[in-house]
Amino acid sequence: DAMVIQNPRYQVTQFGKPVTLSCSQTLNHNVMYWYQQKSSQAPKLLFHYYDKDFNNEADTPDNFQSRRPNTSFCFLDIRSPGLGDAAMYLCATSNQGNQPQHFGDGTRLSIL
Amino acid sequence: GDSVTQMEGPVTLSEEAFLTINCTYTATGYPSLFWYVQYPGEGLQLLLKATKADDKGSNKGFEATYRKETTSFHLEKGSVQVSDSAVYFCALKQNSGYSTLTFGKGTMLLVSP
Image: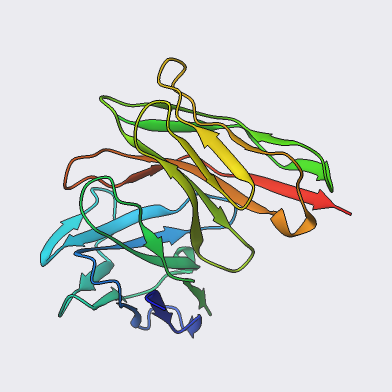
């Protein structure tokens, strides 16, 4: 089935050690999103790509960066994770306009 | 800016009870409206959607009607099951090309046997 796949499902890293989360899609959607979700909260948009155009939310920390090498893949890089970055990270895709977003199952990031 | 307000949870029901989760929104124009469901440890799944006033979205026994006059999109189900226990998010998206989702805070539903 066409879908959004996130790897890994669980990631443990050390305080300050860079980490990369990956997302791939087989839906051929032109928009890809990264969200951070903390316990009992709604997902918070970090940034999104419209094709290759990168759109950063104003309050996304500089510690978070993203790459989209092609239509199918998108990466979230956390350069120096702090304890406050422990969360679920969700990738989503959509087409433009009023089309719904399709989410992956998320990567749960723990910081030691 | 756009915003979505949901009733606070948790909502606790017995199996086969009737469910309503209220959702109201503030937005310019005519956004599309969505309900997403999140089961423990998983991502969000699209439950249903409506793209214009008076549209009714439905899926898996859940329904919601886009009410422009009351700016509401309440989620209902006639008979809940234990397996419906999850967090439900109401969201809106403007119909322009570069819009993103605006989420409510989510409502946890707990259904007991």
